[in-house]
Image (cartoon, rainbow, N blue to C red; front, side, top):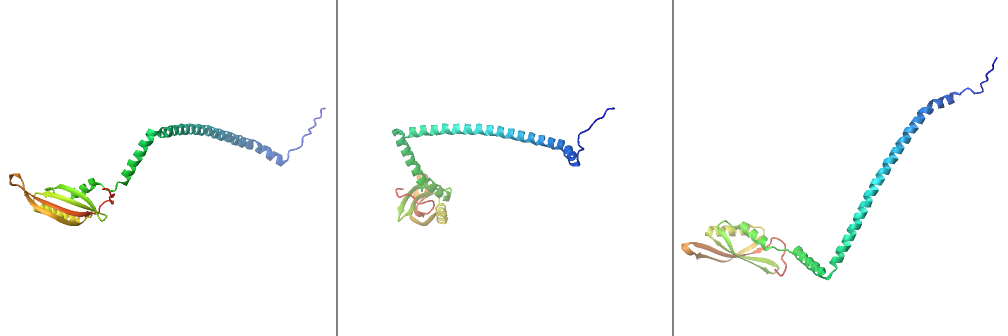
Length: 195
């Protein structure tokens, strides 16, 4: 007769419970480890990618800085300094331009009927105000009067005064009505004193 002896102890319910959950917990831990590794790998790839972009931007910045220094060296040469100073002066004049004769003539032209044309235009400064002197020629007296009414109603012109009016006999028996008037121009910005 053979006697077998079993020296193992009987597993307790706690041990059986732990043994039953060991495999699922190990699988969850492996999946978590896999996700953690893949996330770390993706982060490392992104780090490498953005580090490459950053180094490219830094090298481009260094090239631009070198280019800027080269241009500054070129501008510091005497012949370019004079040119740069002249360009700044001209730009300042353009920025300070406060009155345009072209704008004035355009405003006057909008007020004229088709049968009236501008013969002369003069601008003067009287007591800080711009006074425009206009000489016109029209086919009829009514056309010239229409211009005067339009000039008086225009928001850019004030204190319209007739200085001279007459009729001129042209070639072939045609007549033209001549008119010289003045008005204070209030449109646009104030003109510089040298204008």
